[in-house]
Amino acid sequence: MYCLRRVGLPLGLVTALAVGAASLRAQEIGDRLTWHASLNAGYGRSSDLPTLGIPIKGTSDYRLFTLQTRIKLSEKDEFVAQLLNRKFGASPLASAIGDLTAQWAYFNHRFDIGDATANIKAGRTPLPRGLLNEVRYIGAVLPFFRPSMEVYSDAFDALDGAVVSIRKPLGDFSLEAHGFFGGSDWRSVVTTSTGQDVRVQRMENYYGSQLYLDVPFANIRLGAHAARMEVRTPTTKGMMTNTFVSAQSQFSRFTLRAEQTNINGFAPSRDNHHKYVQAVAQVTDRFQLATERTISRSRLFFATPALRAVLPAATSTGAAAILEVAPGTQLKFEHHWRAGYVFDSNVATVRSQIPPSVVLAPPRSTRYWLVSIATTF
Image 1: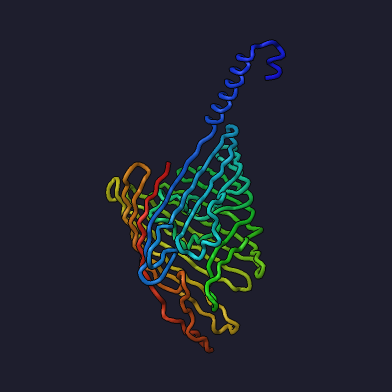
Image 2 (image 1 turned 120 degrees about the vertical axis):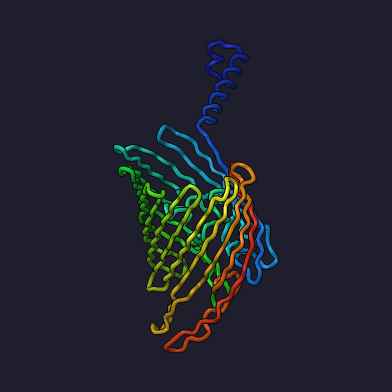
């Protein structure tokens, strides 16, 4: 404005030019900026034992909210940020979950290599792991409130580092490959002799790859993930490996999905196997039915090798009815049967450990109901 006044322009015209320039800049940013939000909120109640944050007396403090912004920097560059608010009722994990967190904040550059498309993401990026990791908090695209907790756990939802991706057509097939390096967090609840401990483990030197193959027949998508990471906590250090295999088939009104993950670690104090099978039927244009079966097994390690045993940690069977009440908005009614040893309160695991065998305590069980609404806008 000072320079314009020096050439003798009237103050009113100078002001008008300045306001116009600011308006054009705002319009330019508005053309390059997009945002999306999702809300997934519900009420849950458990019958016999608290589980997954759902107490016996019920809770309405069950919510997932995301707000994502994207700003286009050029034809091939963008910046993406996503804020996350989540509440899981009376879950012991509540102390390890902030009210509002930056789930993602990354720079993305796209470039072409022949008929292939490649991307480089750097910052706090989505972690390519399984079929649902990137949409795990978007209830409107999931048949249940969230993916199987045993398989996805409260972990690995983002990577502090870099991801290189390439997508290439192979005739009627398509190959998608991701390589990544960085660090991530793993939040978990561990039952000990004195109660339940919430643990936040930091995974550094986390590297690996995720491959997807899309097959035209029956819209089949196959995935394989392998990663290695260094666990860093004040009391624990060591290397762990994680494998994750996925398969999905989509017909016009039926979707079948199955995934399994194995986590093995240092010395070997961790050997966990989790898997689920899920089916979704589109009964009408606005009504779906879904069912899911999850199985989680862990190996128990003792000072005496002969005592090592397999613990059927948890089994869960769920069913859901999903009604589309408006475009992009769903009302869900879920009922789950859960059995095993993993709940939000202490459950005895081992009755006796006298060589040459381990006697497990009887498994416990509970049922829980969850009514939720999921929307995107």
